[in-house]
Amino acid sequence: MPIQILPTHLISQIAAGEVVERPAAVLKELIENSLDAQCQNLLIDVEHGGIKQLRVRDDGDGIPAAQLALALTRHATSKVASLADLEAVTTLGFRGEALPSIAAVSRLTLTSHAKNGDGSAWTLAGAADGDYAAPRPAVHPPGTSVEVRDLFFNIPARRKFLRTAKTEFEHVQQVVRRLALARPDLGVQLRHEGRTVLELAPLGTEPTALLPRLAQLLGEPFAAHTLRLDAAAGELHVQGWVLRPAFARSQPDQQFFYVNGRMVRDKVVLHAVRQAFSDVLQHGRHPAYVLFLTLPPRQVDVNVHPAKSEVRFRHSRQIHDFLLHELHKRLAQGILNLPVVPPVIAPARAPALTIAPTVAAPAVVNAPAAAPRQVNDERARYQIEHTLQQPLIAPTASSLEPAMLAPAPLGVALAQLNGVYLLAQTATGLVIVDIHAAHERIGYERLKTAWLAGQVARQALLLPVTVPVSRPEADVLVSHSAWLQRLGLVIDRIGIEQVLVREVPVLLQHTDIKRLVADVLADLAATGYSTGVEEALHAVLATLACHSAVRAQRQLTLAEMNALLHEMTTVARIDQCNHGRPTWIAIEQRELDRWFARGR
Ligand code: ADP
Ligand code: MG
Image (cartoon, rainbow, N blue to C red; front, side, top):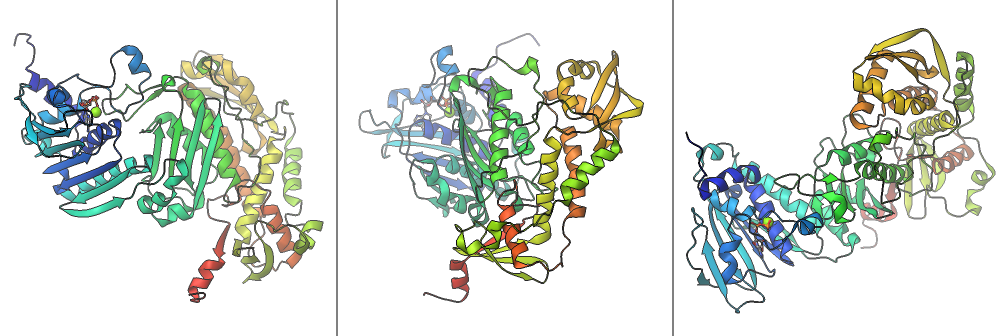
C-alpha cells in the first residue's frame, strides 16, 4: 500500500481509541467541558449504562452558533493558543480532541445557548467527514447540552469490549463521584433510565463545605472516622480527608487524589501515601482518602496522557517528601490531633534527583546526625530490654488526681471490663480502650524512639556477605552509603556488579541479609528511596513490643488505668496498634441517649 494521508473521520476514530474507552470516559470529557465553561449545575442523563445514551446539560457560558462546528473539529479549542498557555494551563481540557473523537464513534448532538450570544439556542449534529451543515434553531436555556447516543455503533470491535449496562453504569457513577468530591459548590443530578440516582445540592466554595458530601458519596463510616488534613510548605498546599487507618478498607476503592482540581493517579503520590501509612495499616488493608494538592501550574505537566489522568511533576521528589511528611505527621497525631512528634527515618536523598527547588523542601527528618556506635550484641539486648522494662503504666502525679486537672482527651478511668477493656468517662461520653492493643503501640513507639536516638547498634559480620547486584545498584552506594550506615548497614563495593556487606543492625543479624540488601539497593537505584531497612527494623521491634505488652486479663488499679490513658495521649499513632487494629473507640453521650430514646 502506498503512503497516504488518512481521511479525517478515520483519524478521529483512531484518536478516539485513546480517549474514549467506555461511556464513563465520554462522560468525563463532557463534564470537564462543562466545568471549563464555569457551570454551576449539571444534569446527567444516562441510558443503558451510557451505551445507549449519555446526555450532559450544563448552565455554563455556552457556545455561539457560529462556533458550534469548530467545537466538533479536531485540534480546535478555546482554552490555549500558545505553548506558554499550555505550560500554565488551568482548564481541565486543552487538547481540542474530545468532542471530535466522541463524534467519530457515536451519534453526537451539540446544543447550546451562549450567554453572550444572540439570545437563542442552536443545535448541530456531528458529521462523519467533518463537513457540517448550518446549525438549526433549538430550545435550550443558557448553557450547553451534549447528547451522545449509540456509542461505538460504527466500531463493532470496540463495542464488544463494553461490559453490561450495570458495570458501565458503575464506572459512570465513579466519574460523577470524582467530580462531585472535587467541587462541593456544584449542583449535580444523575439519572439512570429516567430515575434519579444521585442528587447533590450545591454547597459552599470553602474546602470544608465538602464534609456533608463525604457521607453521601463515600458512606457514613468515612465521614465518621475521618481525619482532616490541611498543610502547606512554600508553594505546595495539601488539604482534604483521610480515613483513620484502623478503619481502612479491604479494597483500594476510595482513593481520590486531585492535583490543581484534576483527579489523577500518580505513581509518586501513591508511593508517598503508601509509605505514610506503612506503620499504621492492618495487613492487606487499603487507605482511603480525598486529598487535594495545589501548586503553581508551571510545576506540573498535565499534557502527558491522552485522557489527562496522569501528570508529571517538575520536582517529583519534593512533592513525594512533602506528602509523606504531612500525611505521616497527621496520622501520628491521630483523631485527638495530639502534638506528638513522629519519629521518621529520613528517606535517602539522592543528590542526582534533587533538582534546584523553587520551593523550600520540607524537612522530613528528625533522625539523628550522630554516627552510630558499634556495640556488641549484649549491649543492644540490654538497650531493648531496658526500654521495654520502663513501666508502661507508672502512675504519675497528674494521673493520680485526674479530677483536679484539665479534662483529659481520653477521659477519666471508670473500670476495667473482663480484664480486657478499660472504660473511661469523657466530657462528651464514653471511651473504651483495648488495653493490650494500647500497650503494644506504646511499647513499639518507645522502642522506635530509643532506636532512633542515635543508637542503631551495628554488628560486624564474622563472615561478610557478598551480594551480586546490577551496576546501577552498585553505583547508588556512592551517594547513599552514609545514609545506609545511619541505619546500621556498612556496605562496600568490591566489583562492578558486586557488593560486600560488612556490618548490619544488631536486630537484623538473623534476617536474610542478602535479600534485604539486594531489595534496598534495587529500590534506591529505581526510585532514589527505600524503606526496606526501616520496615525490617520495625517488624522486629513490633514483635518485641507485642510480646512484652501486658497480656489481657491482668487487673489494673484505677491509678494505673489513668496513667495508661495519659500515656496514650503522648504517643504517636496511638489510634491503632502495631497491627493496625483500633486501640480505642468513643461512644458519644448523644448516641447513648438515642439507644434509650432519651430527650425525644
Ligand atoms: P478542549 O476541551 O480540549 O478544548 P473539546 O473537544 O472537549 O476540547 O471541546 C472543544 C471546544 O468546545 C472547547 O474548547 C470549548 O470552547 C467548547 N465546548 C465544549 N463543550 C462545551 C460546553 N459544555 N460549554 C461551553 N463550551 C464548550
Ligand atoms: Mg474538553
